[in-house]
Each structure stands twice: as structure tokens, then as C-alpha cells.
Amino acid sequence: MDHHGSSEERAQFHSMEEGTQEDWTIIARDYVGFAAGLPDRVLAHLRLLDGDFGGFPIDRLTHSLQTATRAHRDGRPESYVVMALLHDIGDTLGSYNHPEIAAAILQPFVSEEEHWICRNHGAFQGYYYFHYLGIDRNVREKHRDNPYFDACAEFCAKYDQSAFDPDYDTLPLEFFEPMVRRVMARPRNETAISAMETTAAKAEVPA
Image 1 (spheres, rainbow, N blue to C red):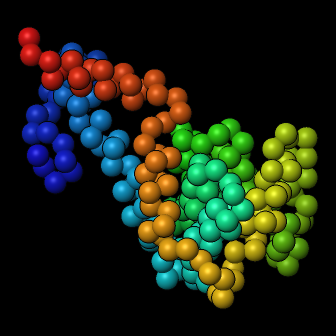
Image 2 (cartoon, helix red, strand yellow; image 1 turned 90 degrees about the vertical axis):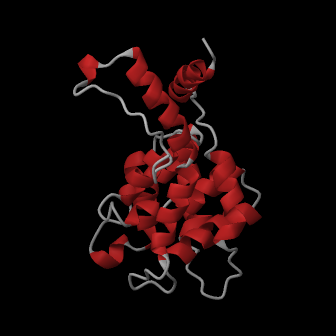
């Protein structure tokens, strides 16, 4: 095994049109192991927010943890809590569109409503501060007719905009790690990964 945990074997094609069943059996086998490591990679990236204040009263990791803590203590399901935890994970690579980055990561594992909340929370969060920056604070109104409007407004009001309190009893990342692993263990639409697993499993069966 190499340092990425993949097999020594590699596909032999130079372009996909040259690919063979043997090539794709190798790729499928490595994909299954790689996909299983997704929670670890997500948690590692989330930790990049540690110590990154950006002028806020608490750093971005603590804000993420506090948002998730508030959602958890309010009785939200695990997928919602994980969405709350990861809603700003895109800050490092998507400084101009961080909600879309987070939503793309979460989409296979959360409900349609939770995905929509994550993808659009930036516009809804703006209600609390856009006017200080010369921007219309009511930008969120463009979504007024969406069935998830109220849910997104509630997410921001109850959990996101209120999660900047240095004195709040915020739960540590270790508390949420098992949730992340459970929620991201399997995509809700398993078609792609199931096909890869089936192909990989066939390769393990002796001829």
C-alpha cells in the first residue's frame, strides 16, 4: 500500500477510452477505500479554521462548533447538526462563495432542505450585517417563495448569527466527530458507490 492507502496496482490506460475491465476493477477497489476516508479529510480541513478569527470575537472553528452545539442542544437530527458544523468549512477555499463549497460537500449526505439551508445561508445571514457594509440586508427576500425560506431564516436566527459568544459552553470537535462519521458513512443516493463496491467485491471472489 502507498501513503494514500491505495493498492500498488494501477490502471494502464493513457485515456479513458482505452480503459479495460481490469483497469476499472483496480480503480473501483481503490475508490472504496478512498471514499471511506472522507470524514477524516473533512475533519482535517475543518481544523484549518482553528485560530482564524478574521476580526470576529471567536475563531471560525469555534463559531462552527458553537453553531453545531446550539443546533444539537435544540434537538436537531444528526444530519442537521453536521450541516451546522460544516456550514462555513468553505471559508478557506471559497472566500467569495463559501456556502456553495460547504453545500457541495454535504449534498450526498443531508436532506434537500438541509442542503438548501447550507447553500443559501450566506444571503440569510446577511440580514444581520449587510446594511453596515452598504448592502441591502433584505437580499434574502429573493428566496421568499422557496419552501425552505423559513427554515433557512430560522437556522441563521437561532444558530448561526448567535454563535459568536466567547462565553458560551461550546462543545469540542471530538464530541461531533462520531456524528460526522455516521452521517458521511454512506451517501443517501448510493448508486455510484454501490457500483464501485460491487465491482471491487467481484475482484475479491476467486475465479
